[in-house]
Every structure is written in C-alpha cells, then in structure tokens.
Amino acid sequence: MRARVDAGVLAVLVLFIGVVVTQFVVSDNLQSRHERRVARVEAARDANTAVLQHMTDAETGVRGFQLTGDKSFLQPYDQGRIGAFTSFDEIAGRTTDPTVLRLLTAERAAASRWLYAFAYPVVNAGVADPGYSQTGRGKELFDDVRTANAAVAEALQADMRRVNAADRRAARLAQMLFALLAIGFLAVTVALAAVARRLLLAPLEHMRMTLQRLSAGELSARAVPAGPAEMRAVIGTLNRLAAETQRLLAEDDARVASTELRQAVALALRETCEPAATACRVAELVGRALGADAVHSRIPVGGTDEVDVRWPDNAPPLPEWTVREVLAGEAGTVRVVPDVAGGVAVPIGGDADCPPGFIHVVRPDQPDWTADERRLLAAVAREVDHTVRQQRLQRRQARLITELRVLDERKDAFVATVTHELRTPLTSILGYTEMLADGDGGDLSPLQQRGVTAILRNAHRLQETVADLLLLDRANNTVGATTARVDLAEVMTALRTEFEPLARGRDLSVTGEAEQVFVDGDARQLERALRNLLDNAVKFTGPGGAVAYRLRAVDGAAVLTVTDTGIGIPEGDLAGLFTPFHRAANAMDQAVQGSGLGLAIVRNIVAEHGGSVTAESRLGQGSTFTVKLPAAEAPHPA
Image 1: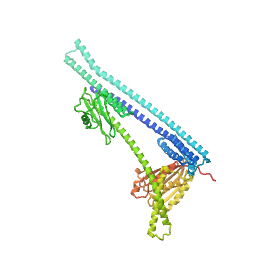
Image 2: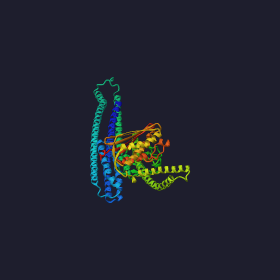
Image 3: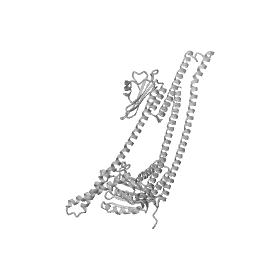
Image 4: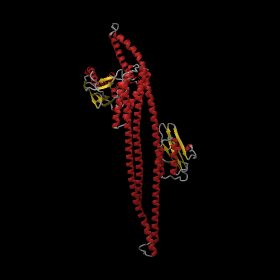
C-alpha cells in the first residue's frame, strides 16, 4: 500500500513539475522569439527611415552646391549617399520577406538613378549652375526615391503585422497545450485520490467492523486470537500511514515552494533595474521562502564593482572573518558556516576580471537545513551566477565594440595622413627619375640605367598603392569624373585583349562569354574594378590553368562571374576577403605580391554603383567572384 501511494504521489509531482516547467520554458521561448522578430523588423524600419534621411541630406547638399558652388555643401552629400547604401545593406540583412526585398531593390534602383542622372553630373561639373536643365528631372527622380521608401516602410509595417499575428497564433496554441496538460494533471490527481481513499478507508472499515464484532461477542478465539494485539497492530498501521502521508505532503509542498522561488528569482533577475535593487529583491525572496532571519549577499558586477546587500535593512553586517571563510569554499556548494548558529552559505564564482561573491542565510530558530533547502539555495545561487556572468559579458562586448570603433577611426585617420604625406615626395621622386630615364643616357652606365628603371617602376607601383588608399578613404571617395551608360561587354572584351599576352606568357588560357548589358556609372572606375578581378584571377592561377568570365542579364541586373582554377582561398579567410589589407594565408605563404587592397576597391566601386560582389572558393581548386550591378536600358541610336 505504501509503494502504491508513493508511486501515485510521485506521478502527480512529476506531472505537476512537467506542466510548470513546460509552461515556463515554452512561454519564455515564445516571448524571446517574439522580441527577436519584432526587434529585427524594427531595426529594418529604422534603417529605412535612415535611408530617406541620408538621401534628403544628399539632395540638400547637391542643391546647395548647384545654387552657390560652395563645396562645403558636399559634405552632407558625401555622408548621405554613403550612409544610404549602408542602410540599404542593413535592411537587406534584417528581413527575409520577399515583398520587402523586392521593394528594397526598387528603392535602391531609384536612389541610384537619382545619383547617376542628377547628383553626379552636378557635383562633377564643379561649378554653380542654378539653371541646370536637368533640375526638374532630378526632382522627379527624388520623388521616386520618396515613393519607393514609403512602399518599403508600408511593406515592413505589413511584415510587422504578420509577425504579431503569427506569434499570437503560437501563443494560443501553447495555451491549448497547457490546458490539455492541466486536464491530464487533474485526471491523475482524481484517480490518485480515489485509490488513496480506498487504501486509507479499508483498514478503518476493517477496524470498525472488528470493534463492532468484539462488542457483540461475535468473534471467536480462532477469529481473533489476540483481540487487543490486533487492535494495536491496526492502529499502528494507521499511524504509520498517516505519518507517511504527512511526510509526502510536506515534500510536495517543499517542491512547489522551490519551483515558485526559482521562478520568482529568475523573473527578478530579468527585470531591467539597478543591480542593487535587484540584489535586494533576490535577498528578500530567499529570506522569506526559507524563513530566514537575515540574508547577506555580495554579487560581483564587473571589474572591481560589487553589490553588497543585506535583508532586512537592520540586519547586522557580516564579520570579515566570516566573509573570508565563506569565500574560501567551493563555488556553487552549500556549506555550513562555523560559529554562526543556523548559518549556511553558497559561494558564487568570479573570473579573471571579477572577484567571487556569495549568498549567506541565517536561521537561528531552525539551525538544521534539509537537503531540499540546500538544493534550493544552490539553484538560486546558480541562477544569480548565470545572470551576472551574462551581464558582465554584455558589458565587455560593448566595451570591445567601442574600442574597435575607435581603432577603426584611428586607422582611417592614419591612412589619410600617410597617403597625403607620401604623395609629395613621390611626385619629386617620379619627376627626377623620369628626367633621368628620358635623357640620352650618355652619362649613365647600363647598370645605372637598370637601376633608374627599377626606381621608376617601383615608384609607379607605390603611387598606385597610394591611389588605392585614397580611393578607400571615404572622405575622398568619389565614383568618378564622368557618369554615362557603360557597355560592360565592351569593357570585358578590352580587358581580355589586355590580359591575353600576360596570360600566354604564364601558360594560361583566358576565355569569356558576354551578352551586351548596359549599366549607368563611371566607365573608368568600373573598368578598374573588373581589371582587379581579372588581375587577381591571372595572378593566383598557376601555369596550365584557366581563367573564364561570363556576363549576362538576370532579372534586371548585370551579372558578371570571373572563375579561375588557381590556388583557391582558405575557408577561414573568406569572411574578411573584401577588407582592406586582408590577404589570404596561402597567398602570403607562396609570397604572391599584393597590397591586399584590390578586392576592397572592387567592393567599394561596386557598392557605389548600387551593386554587390561575392566570392566562392575551394582551397586548391580555384575561386569564383560574382558581381551584380543594376542594369540599364540600351542607349537609343543617335
């Protein structure tokens, strides 16, 4: 009978805990998922608002320059156009909704049309031109940008409504699940009550009948060989059953109280308030749940900062020797504090940057702590330790991000300064070296002539590197002097003719397939970007290899792929491939010359033209680079 009662109580407890834990986990996951999705859409909406603000700044700067010719108006223009396309990329990374992405492509194309048809011609003219004939067209194009931005904003709002509706459906489904679990819990409880009632009342009924029969003299000596002894045995059985039932009920109450305390502590730790107020709230919860007279806690927050609280406020502070004794214990292990009546403590581990902490509970009236109470205190300490560690990691991450941002700004300033300081001596070196190289050479020996030629060649190489650095400097970055409709097929054909002699000298084959696709942009800069891609393909491909390109129009975009059978790129280097000065490990191991700026320049030029560039590679098998640019209509015959 005891085994059956124990099994039934255990089943009820397991089911109850399962219901509570499932509800807590599912509700927390649903809430976290909803917050993440809402935050993602909100970030996309903020970025879309930033796009309109950046484009408005750029439009204001262009108009001011057009009217006055003052180049100071171009500062918000430069910042606005760069910021707008950065915000475009942020929106694309924040949403997966096909409608939003389609409208975002239209908005990006509208911004590019305004830049290439109005802004760049005004800026590249370099003088005030209030009567510019394309001003009306520029206003129409900018109105298209506003209309496209509003369409994206409306699509993001619709996406937000869909997210909220989907999350509400998921919440209703979870509520139905919890209702079914509650029904199951009630059914098991009713069944257990029926079984317990039968098991408890059967001995009592047997005792009642025995007493009645004894009083009536109906029991014979054989039926009740020892009447008082049998009575005492029945009463003893009932007493043991009552004691066992009371013990099980007490354990069940303790488990319920433990679960409620852990939930309350977790909720208090998730609240966004001051660390001291949170620590006081946790101390109060622990003290009231365990019936303690005083609770002391010291929680490391970050660095040397600690939150030292006690509950209630009038509780005496802990002696230093007690603190040292507690901190000397193993983190997460509940231990009895010597010489403190009814005192137990659990240390909280620190790390290299933060000292350890502890939770100390005093209960003189009930100095004996049960195993359940110890486990409860240890669970609370683990919850506090986990939350504090997460907060410390978030603070460190924020500090590192700030430091990286400062380093990036210093790097930009350093690059700008170095390139400026290098241009003046390079001009002198090139001038005098060209004078020596262009002379009749009568005063120079053949060895000296070769030295002058080497100086000139390397000075030109250094000059190209400085030009690359200037191009990567956002403050000086411009798309180009002229903006026109560019035939990419013609550009690729010219580049193929340019690289074929070099490829034959290295025993390589260069093949290509190009449809006639037009884009709006700077022909010189686009040629520079595509030349860098072909140059890299030839440079990193060994003798006997092949380089191929393919240009085609796909869904309103010009798509160019450049494929080689070269050394490939390690997987770990792909993420930073388009970062300035980044070079793959195998390229440095094989001593392939390069500054690490070519692909960064490709990315900047392509981004300035409203496009994107990606890379795929397998180590030892080759690489494929894909450039996508907004396509334009073919020009009308003259």
